[in-house]
Image (tube, rainbow over the protein chains, first blue to last red):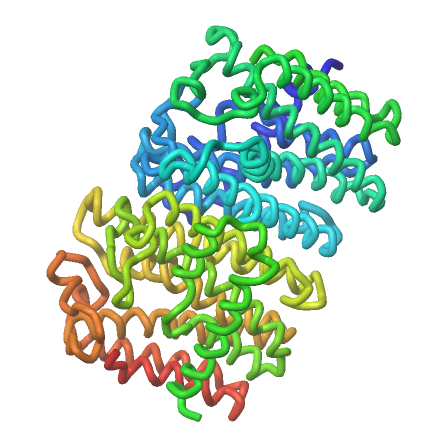
Amino acid sequence: MTFEQSLTTTATLIEQRLDDLLSGARMAAVPQRLVDAMRHAVLGGGKRFRPFLVLETARMLGGDQGAAMTVAAALECVHCYSLVHDDLPAMDNDRLRRGVPTVWAAYDEWTAILAGDALLTLAFELLAEPSAHPDPVVRAALISSLARAAGAAGMVGGQIIDLEADKLGLPGKPTLDHIRRLQAMKTGALIVHAVEAGAIVAGALPEQRRACVRYSEALGLAFQISDDLLDAEGDAAVVGKAVAKDAAVGKATLVGLMGLEPARAKLAQTVGEAVDALAPFGASAETLVAAARFMSGRRS
Amino acid sequence: MTFEQSLTTTATLIEQRLDDLLSGARMAAVPQRLVDAMRHAVLGGGKRFRPFLVLETARMLGGDQGAAMTVAAALECVHCYSLVHDDLPAMDNDRLRRGVPTVWAAYDEWTAILAGDALLTLAFELLAEPSAHPDPVVRAALISSLARAAGAAGMVGGQIIDLEADKLGLPGKPTLDHIRRLQAMKTGALIVHAVEAGAIVAGALPEQRRACVRYSEALGLAFQISDDLLDAEGDAAVVGKAVAKDAAVGKATLVGLMGLEPARAKLAQTVGEAVDALAPFGASAETLVAAARFMSGRRS
């Protein structure tokens, strides 16, 4: 199976699991408007890249796929909550995502704020339950890892740095260090968590876990550079969203600061680092290796 | 020690713990603006009623006070996040809280949204750590309890019901059932969690835990009725905030629907139920009994 086939298969499975989670008994006592907004936020699309990383890392290390599915679904709830809040008028003010109205545009701001809050809370509810893993030590480790990745020193902190530069301006010109820190926190932390969570679920040894983290840090950076390159040189029809958007709004990106050719070279180097980190896992790392290589040739 | 002295003592301890949590190593990698906004949201006041309930329930049942402090601090982070989001222009649009600017008024909306998100995430980070309890089974139980109380079927769901009525209007006249459900979710769930968390930390037997939940459900209702009574008949100078605010905005309350005298009778009955639920704990329940009785005579 190619990486793209594997990603599509995972996306179908995770969509089904999220659909199940956001209906039935768990939602019985939840006001209908909130259920609808949460479903709008989570269902109906997305590459489900983070859940893929959880499932594939767990599979590589021989972990239980049922438990990994719960962990992957929890992580996707956090990713979706972050999009719901990012899209708000007070943040990025986006009315459309994947061609459909964002939650605040489809409902209103208060519903979107609360639906995001509810999804973040749901993620921790899921991870605390035995279906995430029979061993409570593992569940606590998963919760710690997610909270650190998603919180003030991770994703939320990265979002503050990004909006601070956008809305208040930086004291000087943005530096590569600034952009790297922003990227590592805002998008990198959750990608690292995805791979780490797969390793935790599978009961990876400390050494294996460190190799997974090295892979995921490189993968997160490659993902960001490839995203910037797509924006800088992609074809809007293929990418499926507006391109050259960063330059248009004067947003500092890795590609903008480094230049196209050095950015392509950095991407190739970073993909190489990601692939190298997986060497200890041999052939079982095939799909994760393909995921890293995919970043070099992304067209969407 | 009277209930009020005990509440003041707890408030001082919890303020110190929260101050420690929101500084030092844990905040080292957090952008300064976010640290400042989180501290603004959490420090400098509040009765700390929910932390009091955690600590006092744990004490009554012989639980470790150090662990209970961490659990109480986590709960207060959730309470404070909910206030930060509730105060937003898109929600209740409040510029002042306890005489100081709310987080969005002091900073801006995006900082307030993200500071709230970070505090909610921090609560789960704290509960997943061994300092919350050495036994990971207990930590998982605390996280489950908090997530259910704070999430879509609890506090966030109650907030949706409240805002839906305020902003979109109800199909008919509000009923007592509607107000009771709203109250039980919006404010009751976190009060029940506070008492339950104290019981979980102390390793309470199922029977003890059920008695604690009965107490906390009655206490939550008494708290709400006494709040409504204060608004309807309190002295603004003593209460410390505007009174008769509910009636002025046409907000349905238990007191408004029942009438003053029946509401006072209901309050007395509910306080009686709370006190009765604690009978199995004898003299060690003294302070929690006093907390319930306090609701009958609240003047602020």
